[in-house]
Amino acid sequence: MDAVTGSLQLMWQGMVSIFVVIAAICVVVLIINRVTKRKKQ
Amino acid sequence: MEFLVEGFAALTWQQIVMFAVGGVLIFLAISKKLEPALLLPMGFGAILVNIPFSGAVDQVMAGIGPVNGIVDWLFSVGISASEAMPLLLFIGIGAMIDFGPVLKNPKLLFFGAAAQFGIFATIFAATGMGFSLTDAASIGIIGAADGPTSILVSQVLGSQYVGAIAVAAYSYMALVPIIQPLAIKLVTSKKERAIKMEYHGEDIPRIAKILFPIVVTLIAGLVAPASIALVGFLMFGNLLRECGVLDSLSDTAQKVLVNLITLLLGITIASTMKAENFVNIQTILIMCLGLVAFFFDTIAGVLFAKLLNLFGRNKINPMIGAAGISAFPMSARVVQKMGLEANNQNHLLMFAVGANVSGQIASVIAGGVILGLVPVLI
Image 1 (tube, helix red, strand yellow):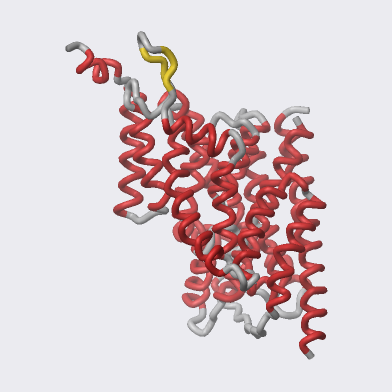
Image 2 (image 1 turned 120 degrees about the horizontal axis):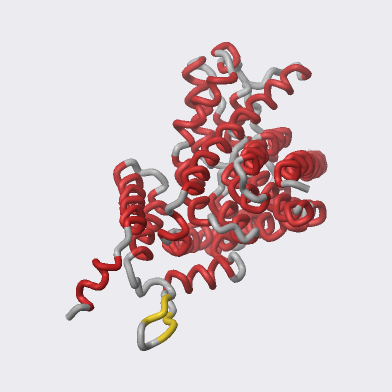
């Protein structure tokens, strides 16, 4: 695989990976917020 | 007495250029106050390591043999061997960051992710210019807008341009207040910049703030294990801050540790700024590509916010997307200032800070993702 094709693959896989990790963190933060809010109430 | 003039006789024009580069960095640090904590030691270090027969770097002395220099030793132990310096710096950075705005508004995390696009756009551009994928990835990581991440990733990938990458990363971070407004104005109208956002702040329970660094470490570690050193040290610092029982350690991490590592990191990076490695056309290309990275980061963040506005009911000021880069807190300040310029009742700071700290998380994840993916793709 040449470097330019590799960089396009890296762009695609990299951005998807970052969004997946961030989405997972976001979901967990929402769960934490919901649980702690319920506890507070 | 010939040895008294040996240094002058051995001086090359490339070394004189490096003295000038060092002088410019020191000037920018002192006169323009651009990242002085890093640019001043780097500038002085650039002079230190480029003096002919400098005792600060490894060399072979006539009649004695190989002699170790302190700057090369610091680089070897502090960066090359285990990336200890940039990683330890992350403990201090983590201890400084309040993730409260992200916990209040988790969707801001996505702006941090979108604003990493500049990294990959730059990698693509760099490969188009003839750099290998590993060097291109090392150059692209300048777009993480995070000096320690740039140093760590380029070092782990074995790039020969660590010095130029570090100079570009720290210089452009300092130039965020100049670069970002240009990029933002390029892709937004005044009407869009004037979009008002209402902030509804609620107190975040302490337990949520304590759980956040642990959970982020677990998720990032399980999904992208290569990012765990970066994310883990950042989150460890944050846990020290939020746990509430280690105030003195948190305080030490925020002040003493950060100052000590910063002091050494700048001069250590100078080890990679020797004339023979630095004075070449690639360094100029890297400086240009660094600018491309910051520009595309900003544009991608803004366009992502505009994309969300197509679907959402509550309109987001697209400038919030620009704050998704990791340059904290400059980027948030830029957005707040531009928001007030467009509408003097528009206070975007809390949203911008949330996006900005999200950028901190996303940039270290991006660093880890690149470290994980590049070896697979070459």
